Image (cartoon, rainbow, N blue to C red; front, side, top):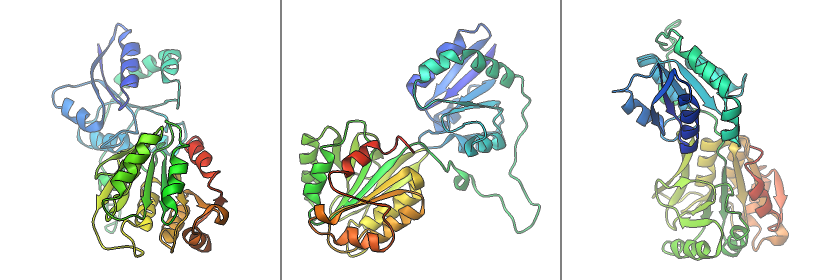
Length: 349
């Protein structure tokens, strides 16, 4: 019997893969795990012949998991991911890290795909089980000045998860209400800085949550950014975004004002540029001053799409005007246009 473990954060994918593989008389799925850290725990007591691993997962991405596995205790591993098109950077990185095969997961219709590609899946598992694995140690010391980067620095550099960051101030409460009421339930996850005093943002978020199709919450440290949810920075605290595996989480932290504000739009935009790069959309809306202009430029330089609300629909055109002056804005839009652009963002990422 070929013993298989499946590591994928989607319960649907784990179930479908198990069903198709266990239909074969010579294959037994001896374990599943929703992320690599759970997989490492299971590997203390289980010894599969083959691993089937996704790339985009919480807590640790699949490439980091693969590198660590191949250094410590190699197991033939098949990467099954929507990022791993043959010849893509992720596919090449996976092969370099020690994957024995790459199967590309479609963005939608995974169940039908697995059934249609069942023969290929089964053959790949059998071929993987016959592989002879060796430890893959870091590429070492050809030159004394070069060193192998730690695993944390070679983690997954791309994800299909998209994120929308919005910054606004004077006039922004009404503009945000207009915008968020027009968001569909499955819209890209949003993170928002609205200049507002402490103790006001929670009530503001609750009011929006009661009238919008999407969830609207005052952000709490560690909240996950996810489709159909808007997280608003608490008054008096900075909001930033970080990657957790292939997902995004928010950090809510105290600190000195930035660009004379706390929360600061610049703090949010810069963090999104670092965490999401071209998978982000940045929107700067009505407000006084220049907070967000430099941060939006950082987002644009990182490959993000950037929008500014136009002068005609702004209560105060200061923040969008400064962003335009800094070369941070790719497109100027009316308030009526912005919801549609956000709603469709992510489909082309």
